[in-house]
Image 1 (cartoon, helix red, strand yellow):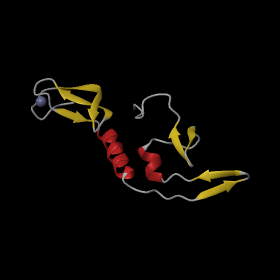
Image 2: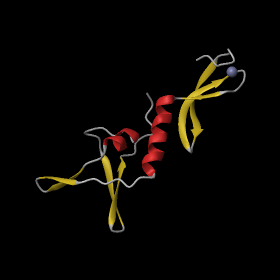
Image 3: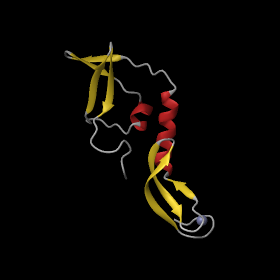
Length: 108
Ligand SMILES: [Zn+2]
């Protein structure tokens, strides 16, 4: 990638943005930072969703209850159909989290 100063910017992993790890480019000459736009978009969406109260309705298939995850939440957390998530009972409620194997932001 070319920097605005004209020099070459190098691809770099694990840059910091709002406490998240993001890939991006750093200019060799002027040290200007360019974050990966798709990853930044996800972080901004996550921050927006964090401030909201998300309501969802339970469905049911046979004896199991189904939690519908709003599309934006699925996108922000990179969740896909068929993917495993973890349910943890906390106090009188539950917490559903992506099954942790690697880093929270997938590399593309
Ligand atoms: Zn530069």
